[in-house]
Image (cartoon, rainbow, N blue to C red; front, top):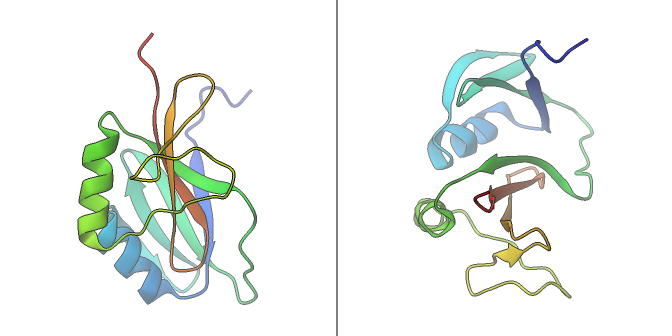
Length: 126
């Protein structure tokens, strides 16, 4: 039923100005609209709505992610912008924080200012 409908992503935040600084300034996403109820971004053609929540508590696990063709390049760009990548105990991550999944995908994680875990993934070529 929804296979032909456009997907809209939602990420809870606590501070619109701080979220805008991060998502627009650090990640380079274009702002489409800002209102008291949402900061709306263009995530490469997908609408991403950052929604202020008064009592936001980050959930465990990745809440949103981006597929990138060049993991090292994306990490270098984001690191230069001030993004810090996460390291997790018990995971074999390389010097850049990249973990290789059993499928061969490369994954790296970082947090937004509200503690939401975001990721980058490079999928193996078929």
